[in-house]
Length: 308
Image (tube, rainbow, N blue to C red):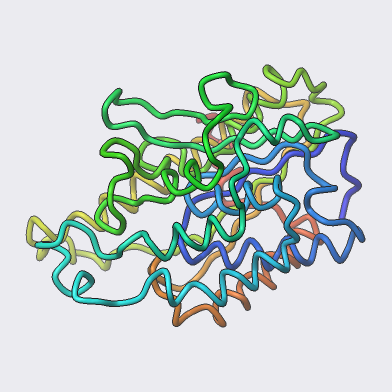
């Protein structure tokens, strides 16, 4: 693995239970460097499950500890009750009470502003979609309006995927509802323009939560009913938006040591804890790619060759 520069940032995508992969990969980074993630990174940006990991890093949790929590609590957070089977009538699949308790147990009553009181200061950026103001909020420890936000609350809001969990306080939902399921551009912008880090002295590690290759068979789309288009259209939007963020960083932050790590996986739902062992195996592979500097050529290549 190439040496990291003076300033090191991390950005983690959304993906529900697939955060298992990233925590496994980061535990391998910790073992390789002999340091915890909180010692490696001083800027962490995350969306949805990525916000859990970013907040955990800021709070001093090891990647191995976070991996253990994902494995232990995944089944409880995504426990199938009557809501799961009648979610079209119930508005959402899962109660968020188990998730709230898990977040409060892990993060306590720490506020966003507390990150800024650490030595050295820790910058944690959490993406949240505000339905009332119709905009994406970037919750940061140095912003006055978010200083007193509880960290667990910010993370809960970022994780509240519509139809999966209830809307938080009637207005906040998953930060990935928009262009920032992959927050690598947010992390690059934060590092260079908010923290004034010299890009020549900065490394940004960006982690995806798996990409399913391949699409429909020829003429398969001709047989879809209107409601069956929701999945394909959502997948198209999220994958294109994610790759776009990578290309924006490459285009406008050329001096930054930017490393995007992504892995091809089988179709796994974001709320399927039965696949945790499989996701851990994928995380092992993702970690090996990271340690071997095998960056995501799929996202990089079109931008460089096609100029898009």
